[in-house]
Amino acid sequence: MSEATTPKDQAPNEQAQTPVDVATDIPLTPAPGANKSAARGNGLALLALLIAAAGAGAGGWGLWQLHGMEAREQQQLSQLQDGRNEALSAAQSLTQVGRTLEARIDQLPSVDELESRRRLLTQLQGEQQLLNQRLETVLGASRQDWRLAEAEHLLRLASLRLSALQDVNSATALVQAADEILREQNDPAAFAAREQLARSLQALRSTLNPDRTGLFLQLGALREQVAQLNAQAPVFSGEGGVLSELASEGAAEPQWWQRALQTLSEYFRIDFNADRNIRPVLAGQSLTQVRLALSLALEQAQWGALHGQNDVYQQALQQAREVLDAHFDLDNPNSRALRARIDELAEQPIAVTPPDLAPTLNAVQAYIQAKQAARLQQPSETKPTASAAEAAEASSQEALQ
Image (tube, rainbow, N blue to C red; front, side):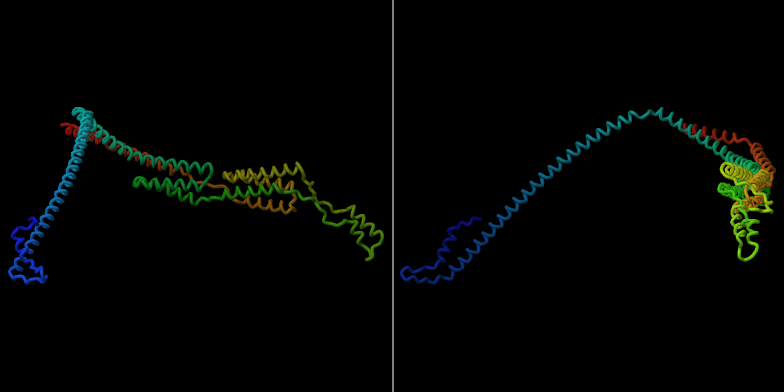
């Protein structure tokens, strides 16, 4: 594979060179065999060059592959080292976790202690189940008793509202609520009690219910009007009286004496028919006392109207009329309007005849007593509770076995 030429190759080449005549410089014509040997030598040289180039390329590629293999080996060695480090750290972590688990396992109770705790838990569950059953049994009856006691209390309150305040609206609402409670019981034994409740409701709805609040407010407005009431000063209807009449008699042209009588009538008055009673004009403390007496009478009427006391109401309005007639002139428009309004309010009915709720209350009480007696006659509830306790104990013993 060397590029050096052999003696055999040099001989044909030398023979292939064209001889030149030194004297004449005219090339000589070569022979045909010499050209063929020269072409063969050139092909062999080219082939040798190609083989040498291919060998050099193969050697370079081999060197490059060798360098790549070394780089990969280095990378694999580094990865292997990293894996060894991770494995060591994981082993250390596992060791630490194992120590922690061992410490926690050491802290766990023993088998005997776990068995005792399981027994206690089983016993507690049985007792809790028994307590739940007892509680449901007690509350099932207690709810009904509470509702029936509430109905009885509502009827008592309605009777009290009727007797003390004669409040028909409140009593109707209370009786209606008691009837709703009995309807929720869904018990055929409550038919008699609900019948009495229906009668009481119908009696309350047909009872006259006066507007006491409206009367109270109207009397309060009259009290405010009394505070502004003033006495009217008396005035004479005639102008001059007898002197003026004498001055106007006579001729159309007044005389000197007629003019004198006319002037005198402006200072003096002579009236032969002055039989009307003229009250003195109230002023100062007297007027204040009269206003106070009239206001107190109206306030007493307010109390009677609000509490349904017809006697007190009528007596207070009569006292107000007397004070108004005695100290104020009815010719005064304010006094006349106040007197007319008092007369109108005196005709308003405030007395209420409430129905008797005692039969209804007795019927509800009888129903409650009958229901309690029927509950006491039922079998005792301790038997199912005892059987439940025995079942719980049996289940706990089976679990222990």
